Image (cartoon, rainbow, N blue to C red; front, side):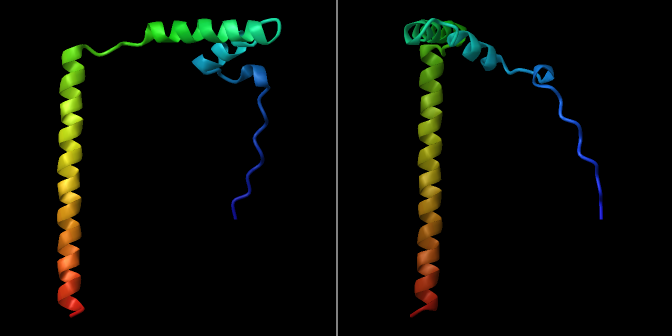
Length: 93
C-alpha cells in the first residue's frame, strides 16, 4: 500500500490566476448592478477587439471544407450502415 502524506494547501493568493479571472474581478467592482453591467460591457468589447476575424476568402474556403467533410462522413456512415444491414439480413434469413 502506498501511504502518502497530504500535501500542504497553498494560500489562495499564491495560486496562479487565469487571464479571465482579472476581467471577472474588475467587472464586479461597480456600485450596484448598473456598475457591474458597465464593466461587463466594457470587458466584452475589449475582448472582441482582440479577436482575429477571418477574411471573406478564408471564411468561404473553410466553410467549403467543413461542408465537404460532413458530406464525406455522412456517406461513409451510410455505407457502413448499409453493409451491416446487408450482413444482418444474410445472417438472419
